[in-house]
Amino acid sequence: MTATVAAVDLGASSGRVLLGRVGDGKLHTEEVHRFPNGPVRLLGTLHWDVLALYREVLTGLRLAAELDPTGLDSIGIDSWAVDYGLLDARGALLGNPVHYRDSRTEGSTPAEGLYELNGLQFQPFNTMFQLMAEPLLAHAAQLLLIPDLLSYWLTGERGAEYTNATTTGLIDVRSGQWSAELTRGLPPGLLPDLRHPGDRAGTYEGVPVTAVGSHDTASAVVAVPASNDRFAYISCGTWSLVGVELEAPVLSPESKAANFTNEGGVDGTIRYLRNVMGLWLLQESLRTWDTGLEALLREAEHAKGSVFDPNDPVFLPPGDMPARIQQWCREHGERVPETRPEIVRSILDSLALAHRDAVADAQRLSGKDVEVVHVVGGGSHNELLCQLTADACGLPVVAGPAEATALGNVLVQARAVGAVHGPLADLRTVVRESQPLRRYLPR
Ligand code: LFR
Image (cartoon, rainbow, N blue to C red; front, side, top):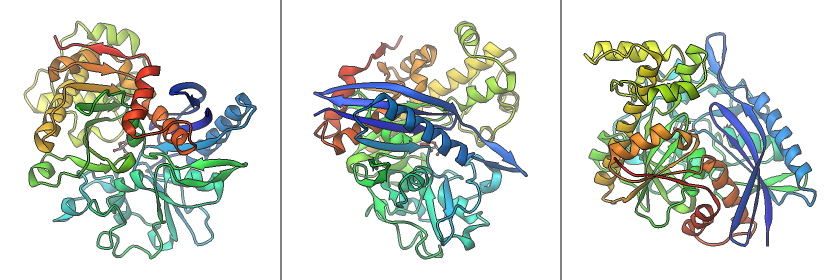
């Protein structure tokens, strides 16, 4: 059987809708719609433009349906994590969703014992901390994470997809259920019933909507083209999510101190990883300079870089990134990069070293040894970053696919409708055999 599915993949800087055809162990995808996404500041608060996103999703689904006259077999939606819309008792949206980079969660601190319960690295923007700063909470009947909200608008049905729900901080990492302890004090019924990747989430114009790994990183990890389980991955886009796939969480004090997270993956796996600030540093620099990347990357190859800590929280909010990087170097006695190529080189050198640290820590803390690092996502196109990462890790890097998130979304749908079978390893074989990949050896 061959299936044709539409994958909606929303990233922090762009969204896309892909048409995927899967059958006979082959995967073919075609991008049918792409649109920009980004924060909108409104009366001092940073929001997403969620209605514009919904309109783009509808446009993309219409274009996908036009390309496939026999009718889509399924639709699946993923996006970045942690952010949500609140609904009132009638199901209407209460206020426009707030962006996780908004300053309302500045100064959050994790309670004692939290890591042992939810297994999550501390990030000030995790949903549970946003809820502590949420003025609309008292008026809310239900909370839907972004992909679940869009899915509700398409289908009229509500649920909480598990992989994304694990990023709220409110799921018990051992049971995989909403934690009674962590959700105490929230309005009763706020959190919808969980559904899992592969579950039916309703229908849109007669087409089944399938829950996928609706956390984009969960979908990306599905499409890592690994040939055995001794791999680390870097899902490299706005963030670099660096880690390994495990069967059980690691909740040791060392793991907590190293700020490693245990996020829920597809098929009950654990995404044991660290958030590294990622290409956000570069995106915000280019936005500040109002310039493109290509020429700068070529110049950066021969430029001198300085090393800064990309995970310093000063880099989290939007704003003048080059100035913050220079300021960081000045304050920490590092040579201050002056030219644009030097700043770009500093970003890439610093990310490569942060990738190395995370790959090394993931192995040390989990006891899992890896022989290859897979770089997936848009960052896999950045040749200099891939080479620097291979050099820093002292391991071969396999780069691609750039659209791993959308491919993971497609494959989980295809499996749900019976066009592909088997465990994640089998889905990964389909990716490996259908996608161009590039290998970088450490120098
Ligand atoms: C990547 C990502 C990360 C998450 C961050 C915020 O797009 O989903 O996994 O930590 O965005 O939601």
